[in-house]
Image (cartoon, rainbow, N blue to C red; front, top):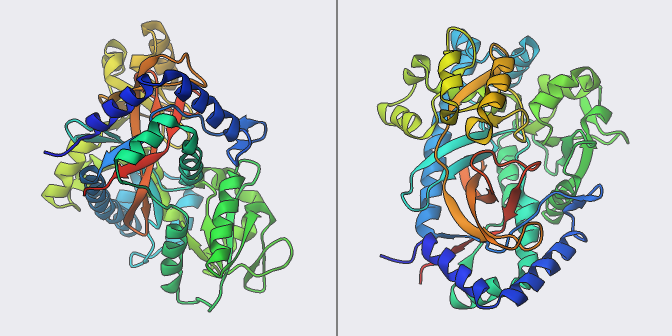
Length: 449
């Protein structure tokens, strides 16, 4: 049996312990360099890190590929069922205009039902068991954080010694997306030879520096690319135009569907162009089917069992936490109040862990107050899954002591294929969120010799 993730982690710990002072100095150098990097936005850092990077075996990477392959097959089936089956659509209870928009802009034979996503999973490196946390099919991000942290890791003495001992690989997440986007666009019936590409979001909440890197990669590939606010797009004479009057042929949508629907009246030209098929968009609104927190609830229903193979439904039961609507008739409130450590509560349509709270992180009285407050609202109740912990040390933002950190692996998916990993850790027991103790780690894998 070859080396494991536990072996790599122990080796990195030993390399830090053998030279604590230099590693501490290196950590502060990385922190200082981060403040001068594209991750410094609006006078704050969008990512903080710890000393040990995330290092996987090639066997684990192959496991991630299998997870993505199976999940994509299941998720595309559910999107197609949503498009075909009115009673199945009712399980999602989407806003009527969103439902209309999905049906008007997507067909069951569309080549891009799930063009880009990030599947966030809790992966147990010791047993290879895993549980899905959520599916980010709208505005999946984190590519720039991984890229920049890997660049700055030159100042990490322990890692530099580790890489001298091992042959490492890493994931390129920008050019690979441009290639996937180009493949998707090549299947578009109204394609033009050299499309003008727009990265579209609400720029007051966008990760602009990441968009800028993507724009540079599109341009490097020979495509014109700009960053556009969805509210500034115009639709005239059958063409979608940017604020300067230039035609937009293809869109890489980063605007989250929830934000689009909240601001729908300010983006009518954009929505009308998409509805009319006047522009190609990677990231159609059908992705909301798998992005919604209701999705895990729907996956466990008999309606979904009917459209999956027995093996596919076994995959759901084994790896998707049991999820129910948090309301009378679906969940017994008294059971949830009595057994808070078994459950986590999530709003049905949010992102960045907003409104999420777990019983293991709250006192009994706080849990009862918060659970009662959202019972019957747009929340789901999910079975809490055990999390995998590894030791790490935080010199720059923490106390410089070894602590246990829970792990989350975000599996990037481009055009249905595994593309890379976004690694995060946090102290605590449950929720990994940017507004808490989240730390982002550069990700590598050790190549087998």
